[in-house]
Length: 426
Image 1 (cartoon, rainbow, N blue to C red):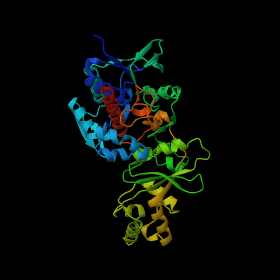
Image 2: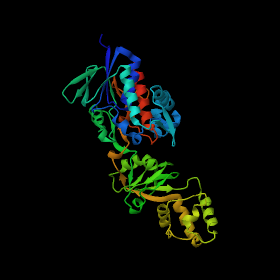
Image 3: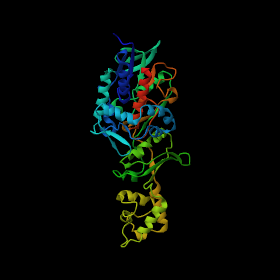
Image 4: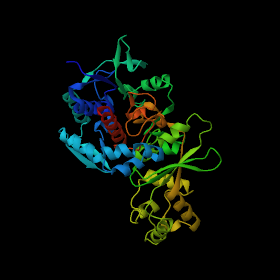
């Protein structure tokens, strides 16, 4: 007996596979769930995520996690994150046989450290629930034929369906197949698409001294991104996360979490942005000043960098200290007894707000996610149905939501997929 209706899901990534499993399991044989994937395998981007470890979700609660997407993203995702909480995601994967473990910075990884276990569990769950997955089936376009949706394949075939779910992903890591195909389909339907830009991507700096710090990581700093193109400093974002200096500029969660602001402004001349780096956010200026004064009394007049290791600030890599000293007009080899009051003031200010110029990002090739996508005003936050387009749903990275590093993007993909499947099942 044929199914009563057909649902086509375009994209066999995190959102598409999750939706397929939930829908097929809820509806059974009454609904034919077909997943179309243009590449030769499912979940290619899953395999590349988290350094091939795949940070599947966060240890944060649903409301706290939603807030990290900004006011607009929080409003849109709040219901989804409460419907499918991060804890629910963890329990689902555990039920599929994927043991998970928590990691620093609110991260959750498969205990095996292998992203393939996550991808395999999602694919097996979808197929096991009855969903059909067709690989090597690129979609050329979508449209409406009467009261049904039409999917045009690149090989010339056309498929009809009662409901269409677009989960084709954004433009990050284009080598995995996410080349932004879905944006053109949405625009062709007359929908607004916020221009996509790379997010969670390393930043570039024009200054050689920044690149000279390549390989240095700092764990406990606070980063503030400022736009100064208007002649005054406008704060665009702030993150307290690890920072890594690279031969291009800045990387690590702290810098990458701020990168979508830089990417959005890139191309607008002139781009005048700085990251203000507070190396010791838990120490105020008075505490640092007191530590410097106390160190000045050490016997033997040791070099300042060495003396600071015994203060609450602790040790600092030699090259990094030289950068702070240089910003203060100090000789990096200065002894603690030779630090004048004015120089001490300048060093405190540098340690609490070293200005690092940035002039761009490394682009989509190095971006973990995409910022931009289908404007949220078009989508119901409770069902993922596109308003005014009965039977059309958009989930995952195609939506104009993006969050920081830490499993938040996967959480958003799973939650939007869950709401979509629930809506289709009812």
